[in-house]
Amino acid sequence: MTNGSHEPEMEDEQVCCEALEVMTLCIALIPTALDILNKEIAWQTFIIDLLLQCPSNYAYNSNINVPNADVLLNNEIDWLKRIRDNVKNMGETFVEEPILEGHLGVTKELLAFQTPEKKYHVGCEKGGAYLVRELIDDFIFPASKAYLQYMKNGELPATLAVPVCSSPATISAGFELLVALAIGCVQNLKQIVDCLTEMYYTGTAVTTFEGLTEWEYLPPVAPRPPKGFVGLKNAGATCYMNSVIQQLYMIPSIRNSILAVEGTGSDIDENMFEDEKQDGNPPLPNPFGDPNLSQPIMPVQQNVADILFVNTSYVKKVIEDSSNSKETIKLLRFCCWENPQFSSTVLSELLWQVKEK
Image 1 (cartoon, rainbow, N blue to C red):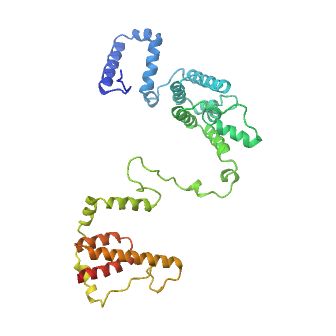
Image 2 (image 1 turned 90 degrees about the horizontal axis):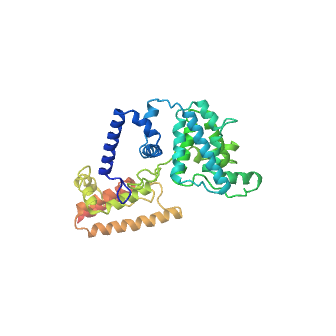
Image 3 (image 1 turned 90 degrees about the vertical axis):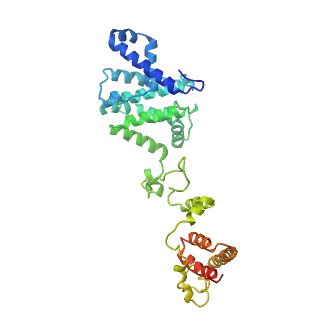
């Protein structure tokens, strides 16, 4: 029961829940009806669809033993092998992607009821099903397997490497099955590591025991969040955060709120006391604020000095043309907050000019 967009609505879900409750009550009152329903193909399909739509881990969490879990697991593995043979021989699975995803998911759930020894036998033990190798080579990474073969003997396979899992959903299900095989089974985990190392790390520092690069040991950095500002967590790349702050400051309401904050330095006179005792305006410092460097000694310093002169001239013009000296002083104090060597001297000179006005 769905609408035109195939998305269930709240009323549809409520009707389905009430119908399931009525069906459960009927089966509880008439237990023999369940035996009759189990013989119907439609009932079996309904139960499977219900489990796929509403997965539940109640059986696993409650440690409920499935009496024929081994038989069901072997049947699922045989089904997956037949699908793999179809892809190898004819290049297609001949099944729909949701069905393949469902069988991979059922196999993963059945592994939860198996012992580590059984997982080892199914995964990589000699004489077993070799499910780990087949998942990596045929279901998920056939192209990498073909490339590895080419690197070893210089020959490409005669047929095109077609993966059994070709959609994002089936690929994800294949990875989840690999994880299920590795949980509690060291042998399967080692087999997975060996396969991936052989495919992607042959000839690198991992296999040649050379010095590791920073990519091997640096902690991962959080990517850009799907919602939120850029740069708030970006490996210390403060340039992005500065850009965000600048853009936010261009919003009049935010800028006015920042400038209206009362705090240290709100009183103009508290910073004018020492300036009244000075004879004339103090000279601007050199570009790097070092009193021992009276003149720029490198082209880089000369460029910085030129930029400093242009910026200072522009700020002087802004403050001379400003009609509200108090707001201008707050603006300059905010802009120069991170550079005390530059801001203290420039603000002293500009405050002196404001006082003379």
